[in-house]
Length: 122
Image (cartoon, rainbow, N blue to C red; front, top):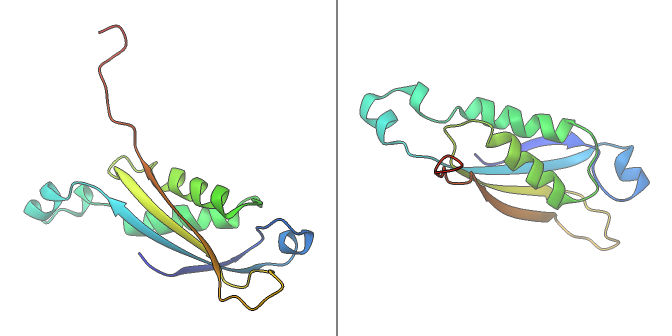
């Protein structure tokens, strides 16, 4: 999913935490789609609407100082869907206050669900 855009109040500077500014999020979901494709069964695939809503919920949530924290929190929210094994998240601040003209700043992270292991004591 590319280009989820929302205005939000994240950043280090006080004005960034008061005045909404534009952010953009990209999500790459990793999951086994074999059964979904074979059965043409939406219930066995990722819920793209839910993934974008999870990302939007984080952006609308409490202010974070760092893009790294914002991206990590988006990844954690998307991974709450048990069908998603891993996610790559890109968060862009589209008008960063850097003192020089810059199109955007961005952070890209990849997070994966820990592999299921044997039960404790086995």
